Image 1: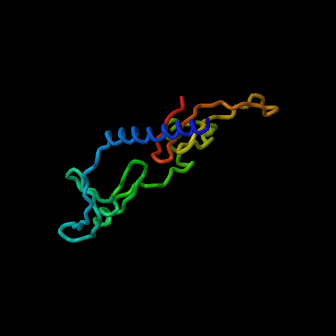
Image 2 (image 1 turned 90 degrees about the vertical axis):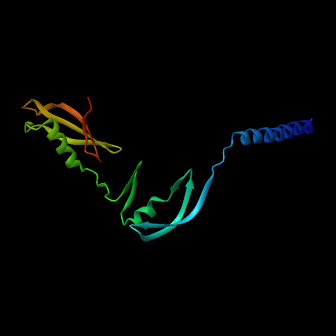
Image 3 (image 1 turned 180 degrees about the horizontal axis):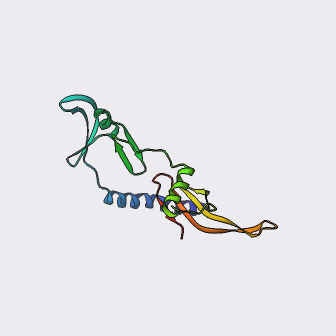
Length: 163
């Protein structure tokens, strides 16, 4: 009995290899590429050499090689490739985020209005604008009255209202 099961499993495995391989071969498309060492010139002055891939009439070389040949900085930020002038990578500070909310939503805010960073969510500050209202001056008991909640993007400084 064990030999029959082993034989069956071996037969299925071999059959899968043959049929799977033929399906893979039928769907395979080869790429006709050429790998070539090239010399890089800028204004007819040789700057460097590097390996390149030539595919479908287009030459592909590393961005860093191009940036060095042009004597420019290169960086990748998310899906953005920068060659030359680089973006400012400094995040907006909490104080700057509060100032941006004040300027956009409360340019003439009363002195009792409190605007502060409540939390950080990823690359976003969560800003709370509120005031403390004293209900009973004898005991000092009171409550907070929220004026609004705001998001400030740490990279761009874009301010949006939560509501």
